[in-house]
Length: 514
Image (cartoon, rainbow, N blue to C red; front, side, top):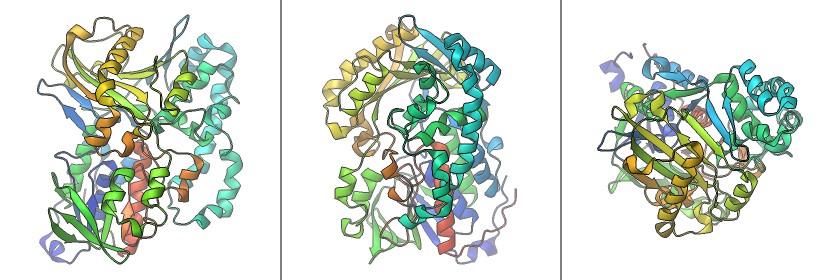
């Protein structure tokens, strides 16, 4: 536990940093800057912290993750907690899952694969599906271990200009990263069976992308799962956000909930604070942790944004969206794993439908059954089921007021493929979040749940930069900036941004007593 700051320390003048948004990136940046000696105020428009990584709670006692449902690669956040005088493992109970998830390949016959980080068992599972692909697993792991070593420097540093991508180190790494290939193409070097490739490639959905379009360097996503494990934070992923908020407040961060920021104040191109509740709050630096496409056009004047003007934001490429069902159900489901992925028989056709703006008619889907691991998430004898169906974002239009009832029916029917035939009569609580809901209720631009897509021309310095392009004193964190989406990457982005602010404000880290 952190010792309280002494009164003499508090009396010292500390530069003020305003953080807009208490999502995972904003919380991580606030923690680090407070530990580095800044006075930090965190403004959150909602009544809870966490952004998309929050807990939804029903009056009946069901609890659900809103967005991310598992914790991956805890090294980064563990290091951030340690730098702030805290211990992640003391603050959050991380349960490593084995199997990590269950993959169900629809077809005749239907095939199930229990994905595990125990490599001998995983080899046996692959052997039952495609004996000729067993030898590829160890090669895949070894090659991606090297790939991550090459790619880690890109994830851990800012790219503040295009020149930063032309260094000898970047050029030397290109053959290893194979930017000209897509994930599925790269996986063909290890696995011939398309189902095995899909088992190691569907993780591109964490970025809202297709393995047939996503750059090949993102094979590291599945590698990270098998190398470092998949974790369930007891209480759900919202428990991690709550822990970050506790540590931030112990460090002196002021968290103002129910306080939307109306605009960022500027003197010329320099951000000078924020306007909230009609009052201007001065700050030496402003960090924006909100959905990029939604927030930037509202908070930052267009004339200051040559690189990311309103027009460019409108024309950018965005991830898919998701249709969500949060179901409080009487009974338990031991026939399900904690994480379950139904991969449609016509998976590639599904992908093409989403990319063209068409709703899949026999979609793939993901079901979380967390109560099999963590019964605290529902009343005794009940379950909290989370159902996610990838769908097009709102760039393609769509009347979700009309579509939602039909798509709910389709999603419930698809659950029968996973053995859930009698679920509807037992539903005691239900909430739907559609692409329109993501945009209107949760301030997600175009309902694109995973933010800007991660194609090559929207990565590194081509992505919005941690020190925001064309401005001074304004910084970004979150999935819409470098290095990108996904919790571990967002945490790393927060570390990059915090270091940039620390350098600009000449902050000297204070001693944080554990």
